[in-house]
Structure formats: structure tokens, C-alpha cells
Image (cartoon, rainbow, N blue to C red; front, side, top):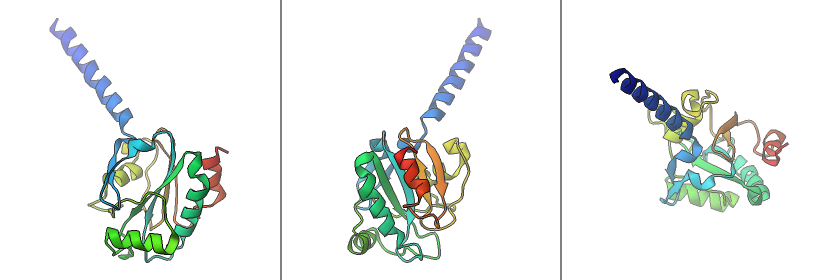
Length: 182
């Protein structure tokens, strides 16, 4: 009887561990918006998501224009861009959340969701980026955030699909074809 009890207990532990791991996807996380509000990423369930780490004083900062263009074109088609300002690369995002928000609005008319400034690598990496960059977390691939404006694609179920380095423009056919389901 004791052996049966231990076997059942062991199977239950395995079952719950596997199910818990399956539930850890992008929608699992909550983050803080650039305005200081809590954002449950589960609110984006059913939506394709482009996640991008941003910076205001970078050679790629002009990509804000392309990001906004992409968002404006596809937002009505279950697509969203979520920006995460980060100061990990040569201190190219030194501003406060309020300063970043003003910069994005004034210079690029950004209307896609922007989150509070985080770290996208290192010892203080934000849990969302820990998930994005570690196969042991996202079950798809390992990656390293190499620079500002690296892009991650998340499908409607909250699964990591792919990532693109900074040099790939947000409006590239690789990204627009994915949005359009081609």
C-alpha cells in the first residue's frame, strides 16, 4: 500500500511540474508600464506581439518611427508592439520613465505600449527578458540581447517564435510576413 501511495504521489508531482512549466509563457508575466501601472501580459492573449528593447540615444533610435508605422498599420489586426526601455548598452537610455515617455511622444508620436525602464541582461535582468533569452524558460531557444532595438516575436498563445537583431528593421518583410500569417 505504501508503495502505491508513493508511486501515485510521484506521478502527481511530475504531472503538476509539467503542467506548471507549460503555463509559463509570455502571458504569465506582469510588468510596470511607463506610467507606473501594472500591466498583465495575459491581456494580450490572442494577439501577436513584437517585444523590443529601446533606447533614446542610440544609432537605432530612428527605428521608433518604423515601430510606430508598423503598429499603426497592424494594430487593428490583433498585433501590438511592447517597448521596454533599457540602459544596458553604453548608457544610451539614461532618462527617467517620464523623460523617455516625453521623448517618444514628442519625437516619434509613439502610441504603442511602453513599459518602465528595465534591464535586459546581466545580474539584474528582468524576468520577462530572462524568459525571452533562456531556452530553459521559453522552451524554444537561447538568445542574448546584443544591442538596443532587438526584436522578439510572440504568438497569440504567448509562445516565443523568433528574434531579430537590431539591424533588422521593424518593417522588414520577415516581420510583416509573420504578422500577416504568410
